[in-house]
Image (cartoon, rainbow, N blue to C red; front, top):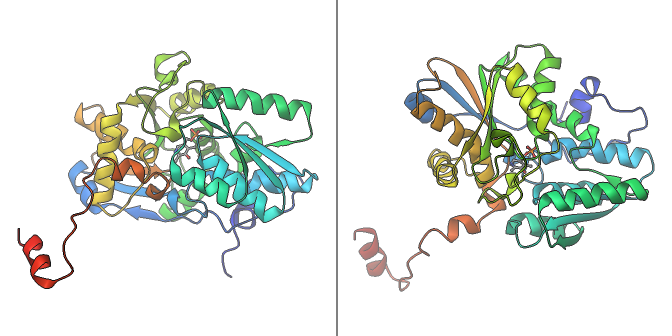
Length: 344
Ligand SMILES: *Cc1c(COP(=O)(O)O)cnc(C)c1O
Protein backbone atom coordinates (compact mmCIF):
# COMPACT_ATOMS: atom_id res chain seq x y z
CA UNK A 1 0.00 0.00 0.00
CA UNK A 2 1.27 3.50 -0.70
CA UNK A 3 2.68 5.52 2.16
CA UNK A 4 0.04 7.47 4.06
CA UNK A 5 2.03 9.46 6.59
CA UNK A 6 3.23 9.03 10.15
CA UNK A 7 -0.02 8.80 12.07
CA UNK A 8 -1.21 6.09 9.72
CA UNK A 9 2.07 4.20 9.91
CA UNK A 10 2.96 4.52 13.59
CA UNK A 11 -0.26 5.78 15.24
CA UNK A 12 -0.51 2.63 17.38
CA UNK A 13 2.73 3.64 19.14
CA UNK A 14 1.72 7.24 19.70
CA UNK A 15 -0.14 8.47 22.75
CA UNK A 16 -2.71 10.59 20.92
CA UNK A 17 -6.29 11.24 22.10
CA UNK A 18 -9.26 9.58 20.38
CA UNK A 19 -10.54 12.92 19.08
CA UNK A 20 -7.67 13.47 16.62
CA UNK A 21 -8.55 14.20 13.02
CA UNK A 22 -5.53 13.23 10.95
CA UNK A 23 -3.89 16.05 9.00
CA UNK A 24 -0.91 14.78 7.02
CA UNK A 25 1.40 15.92 4.24
CA UNK A 26 2.97 12.44 4.07
CA UNK A 27 5.78 13.54 6.36
CA UNK A 28 8.42 11.15 7.69
CA UNK A 29 9.71 8.05 5.85
CA UNK A 30 12.98 9.97 5.36
CA UNK A 31 16.09 8.18 4.08
CA UNK A 32 18.90 6.85 6.23
CA UNK A 33 21.77 7.67 3.90
CA UNK A 34 25.02 5.68 4.22
CA UNK A 35 28.16 7.87 4.15
CA UNK A 36 30.94 5.58 2.86
CA UNK A 37 33.71 8.19 2.74
CA UNK A 38 33.12 9.56 6.23
CA UNK A 39 32.68 6.01 7.50
CA UNK A 40 36.09 5.05 6.14
CA UNK A 41 37.74 8.09 7.66
CA UNK A 42 36.20 7.54 11.08
CA UNK A 43 36.43 3.74 10.99
CA UNK A 44 32.74 3.27 11.67
CA UNK A 45 29.47 2.74 9.85
CA UNK A 46 27.98 6.21 9.56
CA UNK A 47 24.46 7.08 8.37
CA UNK A 48 22.71 10.40 7.97
CA UNK A 49 19.03 10.51 8.91
CA UNK A 50 18.15 13.24 6.43
CA UNK A 51 15.22 15.07 7.96
CA UNK A 52 15.56 17.91 5.47
CA UNK A 53 13.49 15.75 3.11
CA UNK A 54 10.29 16.24 5.09
CA UNK A 55 7.47 18.22 3.37
CA UNK A 56 8.55 21.60 4.77
CA UNK A 57 12.25 20.78 4.92
CA UNK A 58 12.75 19.88 8.58
CA UNK A 59 11.90 17.23 11.18
CA UNK A 60 9.35 19.64 12.69
CA UNK A 61 6.72 18.10 10.38
CA UNK A 62 6.78 14.86 12.43
CA UNK A 63 5.51 16.62 15.52
CA UNK A 64 3.30 19.02 13.62
CA UNK A 65 1.14 16.33 12.00
CA UNK A 66 0.33 15.14 15.53
CA UNK A 67 -0.12 18.59 17.11
CA UNK A 68 -2.33 19.95 14.33
CA UNK A 69 -4.36 16.72 14.09
CA UNK A 70 -5.09 17.01 17.81
CA UNK A 71 -5.88 20.73 17.64
CA UNK A 72 -8.29 20.26 14.71
CA UNK A 73 -9.95 17.28 16.42
CA UNK A 74 -10.76 19.34 19.47
CA UNK A 75 -12.12 22.20 17.39
CA UNK A 76 -9.28 24.72 17.55
CA UNK A 77 -9.47 27.43 14.90
CA UNK A 78 -6.20 29.24 15.44
CA UNK A 79 -2.74 27.91 16.26
CA UNK A 80 0.29 29.83 17.44
CA UNK A 81 3.98 29.12 17.94
CA UNK A 82 7.27 30.80 18.70
CA UNK A 83 9.93 29.79 16.24
CA UNK A 84 13.49 30.17 15.09
CA UNK A 85 11.98 29.46 11.65
CA UNK A 86 11.33 25.79 10.97
CA UNK A 87 8.49 25.37 13.46
CA UNK A 88 6.86 28.42 11.88
CA UNK A 89 7.04 26.98 8.36
CA UNK A 90 5.78 23.61 9.54
CA UNK A 91 2.93 24.99 11.67
CA UNK A 92 1.90 27.25 8.79
CA UNK A 93 1.83 24.38 6.28
CA UNK A 94 -0.17 21.99 8.47
CA UNK A 95 -2.53 24.78 9.55
CA UNK A 96 -3.08 25.66 5.89
CA UNK A 97 -3.78 22.03 5.10
CA UNK A 98 -6.33 21.91 7.93
CA UNK A 99 -7.90 25.27 7.10
CA UNK A 100 -6.79 26.88 10.39
CA UNK A 101 -5.45 30.35 11.04
CA UNK A 102 -1.77 30.33 12.06
CA UNK A 103 0.22 32.96 13.91
CA UNK A 104 3.97 32.70 14.34
CA UNK A 105 6.28 34.75 16.53
CA UNK A 106 9.90 35.00 15.47
CA UNK A 107 12.90 36.84 16.92
CA UNK A 108 13.41 40.04 14.90
CA UNK A 109 15.97 39.75 12.11
CA UNK A 110 17.26 36.35 13.24
CA UNK A 111 15.36 33.93 11.03
CA UNK A 112 16.91 32.36 7.92
CA UNK A 113 15.33 33.60 4.70
CA UNK A 114 14.12 30.18 3.46
CA UNK A 115 12.19 29.62 6.68
CA UNK A 116 10.55 33.02 6.79
CA UNK A 117 9.58 32.65 3.12
CA UNK A 118 8.01 29.27 3.91
CA UNK A 119 5.90 30.62 6.74
CA UNK A 120 4.69 33.47 4.53
CA UNK A 121 4.04 31.22 1.53
CA UNK A 122 1.86 28.89 3.60
CA UNK A 123 -0.13 31.90 4.77
CA UNK A 124 0.95 32.36 8.39
CA UNK A 125 0.59 35.72 10.09
CA UNK A 126 4.21 36.39 10.96
CA UNK A 127 5.02 38.70 13.86
CA UNK A 128 8.57 39.73 14.73
CA UNK A 129 9.41 40.13 18.41
CA UNK A 130 12.02 42.62 19.56
CA UNK A 131 13.59 39.93 21.66
CA UNK A 132 14.87 36.36 21.59
CA UNK A 133 13.20 33.04 20.80
CA UNK A 134 12.89 32.53 24.54
CA UNK A 135 10.94 35.80 24.88
CA UNK A 136 8.68 34.77 22.01
CA UNK A 137 8.01 31.40 23.65
CA UNK A 138 7.01 33.03 26.97
CA UNK A 139 4.52 35.24 25.13
CA UNK A 140 3.04 32.32 23.24
CA UNK A 141 2.59 30.34 26.46
CA UNK A 142 0.85 33.28 28.09
CA UNK A 143 -1.54 33.91 25.22
CA UNK A 144 -2.54 30.23 24.95
CA UNK A 145 -3.30 30.17 28.68
CA UNK A 146 -5.61 33.18 28.36
CA UNK A 147 -7.34 32.49 25.00
CA UNK A 148 -8.57 29.43 23.04
CA UNK A 149 -5.61 29.68 20.63
CA UNK A 150 -3.77 26.33 20.46
CA UNK A 151 -0.05 26.14 21.18
CA UNK A 152 2.03 24.01 18.79
CA UNK A 153 5.54 24.49 20.17
CA UNK A 154 7.30 21.36 21.40
CA UNK A 155 6.06 21.93 24.95
CA UNK A 156 2.86 20.58 23.37
CA UNK A 157 3.10 16.85 24.29
CA UNK A 158 1.72 15.72 20.93
CA UNK A 159 4.72 17.25 19.16
CA UNK A 160 6.95 14.92 21.17
CA UNK A 161 4.71 11.96 20.35
CA UNK A 162 4.97 12.63 16.61
CA UNK A 163 8.71 13.20 16.72
CA UNK A 164 9.29 9.77 18.32
CA UNK A 165 8.63 8.27 14.88
CA UNK A 166 12.14 9.15 13.69
CA UNK A 167 13.56 6.70 16.24
CA UNK A 168 11.09 4.04 15.05
CA UNK A 169 12.13 4.55 11.41
CA UNK A 170 15.83 4.23 12.28
CA UNK A 171 15.20 0.96 14.14
CA UNK A 172 13.06 -0.35 11.28
CA UNK A 173 15.74 0.53 8.70
CA UNK A 174 18.71 -0.85 10.65
CA UNK A 175 16.89 -3.74 12.30
CA UNK A 176 17.90 -2.37 15.72
CA UNK A 177 19.01 0.88 17.36
CA UNK A 178 22.46 2.22 16.36
CA UNK A 179 25.34 2.37 18.87
CA UNK A 180 25.36 6.17 18.84
CA UNK A 181 22.88 8.85 17.85
CA UNK A 182 24.30 12.36 17.31
CA UNK A 183 21.99 15.34 16.98
CA UNK A 184 21.71 19.10 17.52
CA UNK A 185 20.00 20.34 20.68
CA UNK A 186 18.11 23.65 20.79
CA UNK A 187 14.85 23.72 22.72
CA UNK A 188 15.52 20.01 23.36
CA UNK A 189 12.23 18.60 22.10
CA UNK A 190 13.91 16.40 19.52
CA UNK A 191 16.44 14.71 21.80
CA UNK A 192 13.59 14.10 24.27
CA UNK A 193 11.49 12.53 21.51
CA UNK A 194 14.24 10.27 20.16
CA UNK A 195 15.05 8.96 23.61
CA UNK A 196 11.38 8.28 24.40
CA UNK A 197 11.01 6.64 20.99
CA UNK A 198 13.98 4.30 21.36
CA UNK A 199 12.93 3.29 24.87
CA UNK A 200 9.40 2.53 23.74
CA UNK A 201 10.29 0.63 20.55
CA UNK A 202 12.50 -1.88 22.37
CA UNK A 203 14.97 -2.52 19.58
CA UNK A 204 17.95 -1.51 21.70
CA UNK A 205 19.18 1.88 22.92
CA UNK A 206 21.82 4.15 21.40
CA UNK A 207 24.20 6.32 23.37
CA UNK A 208 23.16 9.89 22.67
CA UNK A 209 25.51 12.72 21.78
CA UNK A 210 23.60 16.02 21.95
CA UNK A 211 25.35 19.01 20.42
CA UNK A 212 24.82 22.68 21.18
CA UNK A 213 26.50 25.67 19.57
CA UNK A 214 29.18 27.17 21.83
CA UNK A 215 27.39 30.55 21.84
CA UNK A 216 24.09 28.96 22.86
CA UNK A 217 25.05 26.13 25.19
CA UNK A 218 22.94 26.40 28.37
CA UNK A 219 22.93 22.63 28.92
CA UNK A 220 26.72 22.48 28.85
CA UNK A 221 27.22 25.61 30.97
CA UNK A 222 24.56 24.58 33.45
CA UNK A 223 22.67 27.89 33.33
CA UNK A 224 20.49 29.83 30.88
CA UNK A 225 22.23 32.01 28.29
CA UNK A 226 20.78 35.53 28.20
CA UNK A 227 21.90 36.45 24.68
CA UNK A 228 22.49 33.26 22.69
CA UNK A 229 24.54 33.79 19.51
CA UNK A 230 25.33 31.32 16.72
CA UNK A 231 25.12 31.00 12.93
CA UNK A 232 23.10 27.87 13.61
CA UNK A 233 19.89 29.86 14.08
CA UNK A 234 17.70 26.80 14.62
CA UNK A 235 19.52 26.08 17.89
CA UNK A 236 20.00 29.70 18.97
CA UNK A 237 18.15 29.09 22.23
CA UNK A 238 19.30 30.15 25.69
CA UNK A 239 16.65 28.52 27.86
CA UNK A 240 15.59 25.13 26.48
CA UNK A 241 12.02 24.21 27.43
CA UNK A 242 12.98 20.54 27.79
CA UNK A 243 16.48 21.01 29.14
CA UNK A 244 16.06 18.62 32.07
CA UNK A 245 14.78 15.87 29.80
CA UNK A 246 17.70 16.40 27.43
CA UNK A 247 20.18 16.00 30.29
CA UNK A 248 18.34 12.88 31.47
CA UNK A 249 18.47 11.38 27.96
CA UNK A 250 22.20 12.02 27.72
CA UNK A 251 22.86 10.56 31.16
CA UNK A 252 20.55 7.53 30.95
CA UNK A 253 22.00 6.63 27.56
CA UNK A 254 25.58 6.96 28.83
CA UNK A 255 26.07 9.70 26.29
CA UNK A 256 26.68 13.42 26.76
CA UNK A 257 25.84 16.94 25.65
CA UNK A 258 28.71 19.01 24.32
CA UNK A 259 29.23 22.44 22.77
CA UNK A 260 30.93 23.09 19.43
CA UNK A 261 32.10 26.46 18.06
CA UNK A 262 30.44 27.90 14.95
CA UNK A 263 33.52 27.38 12.72
CA UNK A 264 33.38 23.65 13.38
CA UNK A 265 29.65 23.56 12.69
CA UNK A 266 30.20 25.28 9.33
CA UNK A 267 33.09 22.98 8.56
CA UNK A 268 30.86 19.95 9.23
CA UNK A 269 28.27 21.52 6.92
CA UNK A 270 30.90 21.59 4.14
CA UNK A 271 32.02 18.02 4.84
CA UNK A 272 28.45 16.78 4.49
CA UNK A 273 27.97 18.71 1.26
CA UNK A 274 31.20 17.18 -0.07
CA UNK A 275 29.47 13.82 0.25
CA UNK A 276 26.28 15.07 -1.39
CA UNK A 277 24.16 16.08 1.60
CA UNK A 278 23.46 19.80 1.99
CA UNK A 279 22.00 20.73 5.35
CA UNK A 280 21.38 23.96 7.19
CA UNK A 281 24.04 24.97 9.77
CA UNK A 282 22.19 23.74 12.89
CA UNK A 283 21.74 20.39 11.20
CA UNK A 284 25.48 19.95 10.87
CA UNK A 285 25.96 20.27 14.63
CA UNK A 286 25.56 16.53 15.20
CA UNK A 287 28.41 15.68 12.85
CA UNK A 288 30.55 18.53 14.15
CA UNK A 289 30.14 17.10 17.66
CA UNK A 290 31.09 13.62 16.51
CA UNK A 291 34.17 14.94 14.70
CA UNK A 292 35.18 17.08 17.69
CA UNK A 293 34.95 14.10 20.03
CA UNK A 294 36.87 11.85 17.63
CA UNK A 295 39.65 14.40 17.23
CA UNK A 296 40.26 14.64 20.97
CA UNK A 297 40.08 10.86 21.32
CA UNK A 298 36.92 10.88 23.44
CA UNK A 299 35.05 8.88 20.88
CA UNK A 300 35.78 5.29 20.04
CA UNK A 301 34.10 5.18 16.65
CA UNK A 302 35.78 1.85 15.83
CA UNK A 303 33.34 -0.55 14.18
CA UNK A 304 30.31 1.21 15.62
CA UNK A 305 27.06 1.99 13.87
CA UNK A 306 26.44 5.70 14.17
CA UNK A 307 23.42 7.72 13.06
CA UNK A 308 23.84 11.47 12.69
CA UNK A 309 20.52 13.31 12.52
CA UNK A 310 20.49 16.14 9.99
CA UNK A 311 17.44 18.05 11.09
CA UNK A 312 16.84 20.51 8.22
CA UNK A 313 17.63 21.15 4.56
CA UNK A 314 20.41 23.46 3.37
CA UNK A 315 17.98 25.35 1.15
CA UNK A 316 16.43 26.81 4.28
CA UNK A 317 19.42 29.04 4.83
CA UNK A 318 21.04 29.77 1.46
CA UNK A 319 22.61 33.10 2.45
CA UNK A 320 25.06 31.40 4.80
CA UNK A 321 26.56 29.79 1.68
CA UNK A 322 26.33 32.62 -0.83
CA UNK A 323 27.72 35.19 1.61
CA UNK A 324 30.85 33.20 2.33
CA UNK A 325 31.70 32.34 -1.29
CA UNK A 326 32.67 34.51 -4.23
CA UNK A 327 29.86 34.94 -6.73
CA UNK A 328 30.25 32.85 -9.89
CA UNK A 329 32.44 34.23 -12.69
CA UNK A 330 30.75 36.04 -15.58
CA UNK A 331 31.97 35.33 -19.12
CA UNK A 332 30.79 36.15 -22.66
CA UNK A 333 28.51 33.50 -24.16
CA UNK A 334 31.05 31.81 -26.42
CA UNK A 335 33.12 28.62 -26.49
CA UNK A 336 36.56 30.31 -26.32
CA UNK A 337 35.67 32.18 -23.18
CA UNK A 338 34.26 29.03 -21.59
CA UNK A 339 37.21 26.77 -22.39
CA UNK A 340 39.46 29.60 -21.25
CA UNK A 341 38.00 29.65 -17.74
CA UNK A 342 37.76 25.87 -17.45
CA UNK A 343 41.42 25.36 -18.35
CA UNK A 344 42.59 28.35 -16.32
C1 LIG B 1 14.16 22.88 15.71
C2 LIG B 1 15.44 22.51 15.11
C3 LIG B 1 16.52 22.04 15.88
C4 LIG B 1 16.47 21.94 17.36
O1 LIG B 1 15.56 20.97 17.82
P1 LIG B 1 15.04 21.04 19.31
O2 LIG B 1 13.95 20.07 19.38
O3 LIG B 1 14.60 22.45 19.53
O4 LIG B 1 16.21 20.72 20.18
C5 LIG B 1 17.67 21.66 15.21
N1 LIG B 1 17.78 21.77 13.88
C6 LIG B 1 16.78 22.23 13.12
C7 LIG B 1 16.99 22.33 11.66
C8 LIG B 1 15.58 22.61 13.70
O5 LIG B 1 14.60 23.08 12.93
